Length: 108
Image (tube, rainbow, N blue to C red; front, side, top):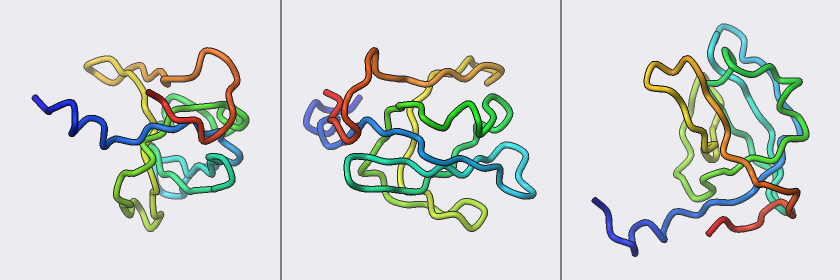
């Protein structure tokens, strides 16, 4: 269990995917370019077996914005997408806003 105060440290933001591409030599990895308000970031996400790059461009997603960057296959991932998945990871579904909302909006 974590405390409420610990949970409040997690910064969830709305972001729009502005670019997406497969990562050469990585069957599961996509490199995404996202826009959160005025800021653009790169994310690496293990979703290539579930989504094509073309399906993602223009979609609004929820991102953990204050996660420490991590290198994956030479890509510095500057956040993490929120998604629900089955126990066997045969299905992945993004957590998304119900309606369009400005990029960078805080999720509370």
